[in-house]
Image (cartoon, rainbow, N blue to C red; front, side, top):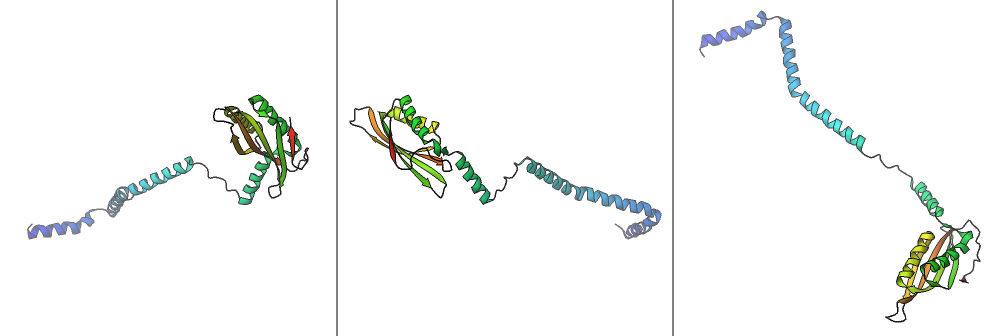
Length: 199
């Protein structure tokens, strides 16, 4: 570029503001600023808005937080649930009757039941330990145990001991020990001392 051309270009630049209206120059500057915002800031803002909208959608679709239960209330509720499924201490004769009925239905020989009542002061419940000497094949003894536990859900099978006369004998002798968990607030219908019931 030659020197006179450079001087002419600088002169044009210097005289240009005089040719244009100040309002037009301000409008042009605002348009350039708006274009810079549109292409520079808005894409980032739009991405943040989309990200926040997805976060809100995830939060709305998430399951509700679990209710916080104080430990004392939880312990009280569990204790109430436990006491709600206990048997009736006033109906221990019904337990013995159901045991003999289950033996008759499953083909197990049951002639007597030994029982021992007890009280758990800390848990505020009574227990009724029942020892049953039974005879029958293994399948019958198993069916007997299943039926007893289904019929009397507050009983627990604590111990099983098996004895067979010979290896060829299909019949087994079993000693089964059940424990009944009973509500202590009901007066018992049976004596509080250990005893035996025969059929």
